[in-house]
Amino acid sequence: MTDEQMEREMRNETDYKLSLFLSSDGKHTVNVEVIKPESRREAVEKAVEVYDFIIKKYGTKQAQAVKEYGNGQSTMQKYDNDQAKQDACSHTNIKFVQSKTEKNPGKWFKSCIDCGKFLGWQNA
Image (cartoon, rainbow, N blue to C red; front, side, top):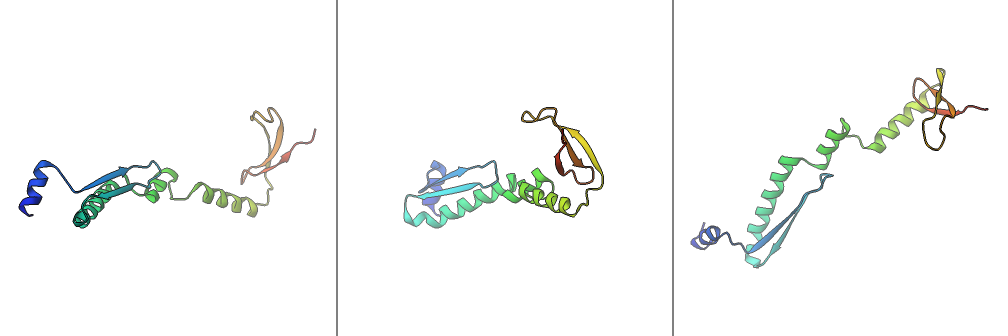
């Protein structure tokens, strides 16, 4: 470290500015604004250092998905897997269920016990 760098460090002055944006979905961002071109390398190294620290502390988008979904699958992947399971089911175990939705309160419908697929409304 040169005397100028040491002096700047003691005054806590730099030739660049870092901005950090933390995101709840795991897509964190570190922006660098360089004031003097000769400080580019130092600025980028510091930005990488900050970003690596944030990733270690909070994780990546994939790590957060694993935490949220248990196996890293997105909601759409889970839906596709459920659909595949329903398509393979023969729907031999059927039950009647009463709707609890605002749109169809108290209306009865058929549902498969094995895969949970909606099989249609009960005829009146």
